[in-house]
Length: 230
Ligand code: SF4
Image (cartoon, rainbow, N blue to C red):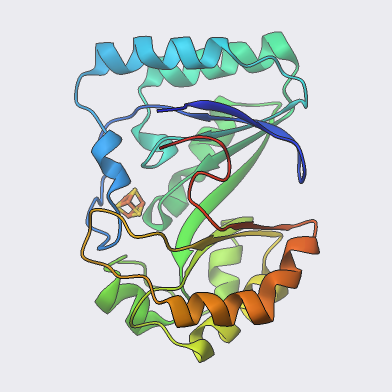
C-alpha cells in the first residue's frame, strides 16, 4: 500500500494516506476502504509517524486522507501533522470529513491555527434517493448551498448502476455552480456488490472530460490516480 505521493499537475500538493480508527458511519454501500481502519492505536500512531516523516513541504500544501474522517485520526497523529507543518512551512492543509461532522469542523481549524484548512466531503450525488436509499450515505440536506457553507470541496461518484445521465448532468452543474473545488471519482468496482455502469462512464467521458481542464476540478479515472492506496 502506497501511503505517500506528490500531486504535481493541478493544485500541487503532497498527499498522505494515514491509518485511523473506524469511520463512525461505516455503512456506505460502495465503501470498502474502511478495511484500512484499525483499532490498534499504538500501531496506527507509529505507522502514521513513518508516513508523516516523508513530508518535505515542497509545495507548502498537504492533503491528509485516512479512509474515514479527520476526526477518526489518533490525536497523536494530528499533533505529529501539526509539528511537521510548522517544521516544513506548510500553509494549506486538506482533510476529509463526513457530512455529519459539519458542526465540528471548527475544532480542527482551532487545532491547526495559522494554517489554512480546506475540508473535502464525499457527497457522491446530489440526488437524495440515490445518495441515501442506494448508496446509504445518511447525508440529508435541502440545498447544495447548505453543503457549501461547510465544505469547500466535494467528492462525487460517477458510473454506478442505478445512477442515470440526468443525475450526472445535475451533479456536474451543481459542483461547478456552488463549490470552490470538486473531485469526481469514476467508480471502480471493489469488494462491495456495487456495479460499475460502463455506459454511464462513457457518457461522462464524452460529455464531461473537458472538466479536466478546469483548475478547480479533479477527475480520478482510477481510485489510485493520486498515487496513494492500492
Ligand atoms: S463515510 Fe466515507 S469512509 Fe465512512 S463508510 Fe462512507 S464512504 Fe466509507
